Amino acid sequence: QVQLVESGGGLVQAGGSLRLSCAASGRTFSSYSMGWFRQAPGKEREFVAVISRRYGTTLYADSVKGRFTISKDNAKNTVYLQMNSLKPEDTAVYSCNAAPVGVVVATKGDFGSWGQGTQVTVSS
Image 1: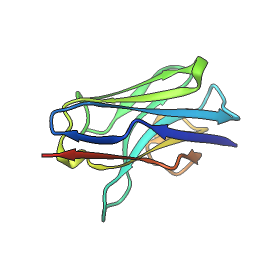
Image 2 (image 1 turned 120 degrees about the vertical axis):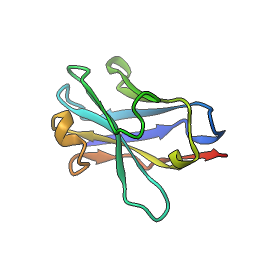
Image 3 (image 1 turned 90 degrees about the horizontal axis):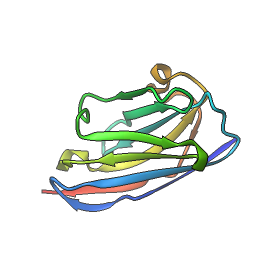
């Protein structure tokens, strides 16, 4: 079982930046995909970004392309989400996911373990 702990959320003005971290512990395989998802109040959870721990392959939601960057440090079992040019519509609880599947399947959010989430609030 994989345990995930997110950190780095907070309140930021529109146009600002935040970096989220997701620290994994327990059983983590090199073939896992590590992803970020978000859920705004009254909305469905949506995919944000995912990275392959083995190959470094990345995928992004269209809404965050060019503004967000996902990266990893396998030695620290940590995944990061650098968020730049933040918009009020980015406000949500951001959760980390560790899935024993490839990156394309991981974007569905149907597999693996989840962290407790971290709140990101972007003011206008």
